[in-house]
Image 1: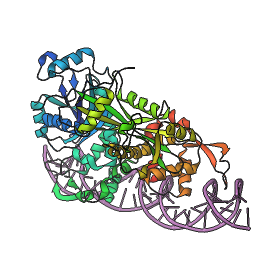
Image 2: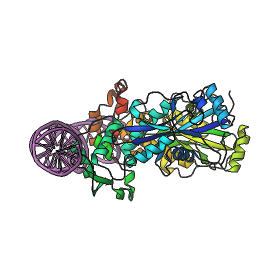
Image 3: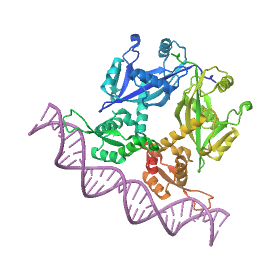
Length: 248
Length: 248
DNA sequence: ACAAAAGTGTTCCTCTTACACCCATGA
DNA sequence: TCATGGGTGTAAGAGGAACACTTTTGT
């Protein structure tokens, strides 16, 4: 019988999703920005080891802030990746050396975050050496990070159906089309615009503003906001608007 | 800045759900069956420390087998509980002593399992000193185990809507009423029996058998089985039958 | 014979789907 | 004036909700 494992290191890896009005994107970093020796060209998810006196959500929030400069962002745990061999020996050696620690094993916890992708954000992350890639175009990441990403996407899909988190990916004021594009991108489906509007408005999740798109070479679309009064009651629990609209 | 945490112990705690045809139950153990000194009368969830060369799902399966004698049971990770103070100093001391380990911190990972509650199972668990309690009647557990239980129930509810796991709580052959009772118990709702049958049969998830209930003092109900052909295709992904039936 | 749960049909109404044209703007 | 996406209505059909009585068994 093997002995109890006490010498584990625990890390968090964050899948940071963003939406540019067209495509769902995720933020990736080079293996080691700070250490060109180990930049093998592979991309990875932003992550970190947990510290003493820090919970996992706190560690994830720290990673998020380091990558994006943002605090108070929607952040949710997905799965744990605990295969003893998920980090091979040479990776492990490097990790121990890099952090100045000694460990036999690294268990990682996946998180996903939802951020508003505006030009300011893009230039901020660019300065950090990070890159926003279309989720559909990401095929290879180092270690098991591809698994972590796929898992996060699956969880995101379910969560969007059952909570109003989709609005975390949109600007405060947005067009109906942006919301429709978002759902189409996340689920890989197409929606009938007329029926989408009907169900959306009858569900009462949106409040119209008096503002419109500007500088577009077609009839400018009205901007809407999320109906915040949904949050005052216990309606969050019952938010299944998108499940109905997508008809799953 | 605090240093990187490497000396964590990782445990798993399992919420083992069972259904007796009427109520949803969970399996609880005394704090330390083996050690009467520490039996303070409080109940806890079955759990264990992870071992070297063991993944978390493997550790959870080990706990499950120790509690119920069952292998190959549906088992799913829920959340992680990582508050540095979730285990207080005296608990920590006891844990280190009991396991003969040295650690500063115990992070635990919640799992839930679904088992068929037949008389054999009940007597097996009774011999282990464990007890099946109605989930509705559980109000106090030691440490943060009540949080782990509540969390598992929430996850179970969502999962039941989106996958055929409900059938893991029923015998191989069951009546329509048992399935209805199960859904009513898990969600705390009431369903119209006629409409329930209509939707259930039209969804094609059940196959009828030629068998009936026996020794009941009313018209015996026909026994049904889960339509296994659902699994051959990719239908598992699209299983939303109960979401439709419950109309969420 | 009685108690207890099984099993069955219909009507009404709501919600979903499918589908085509005019409108406002920038270039 | 043209190209582009915004924005609207209707008709037909499917699916959901509400509801009461007969059947079969054990006692």
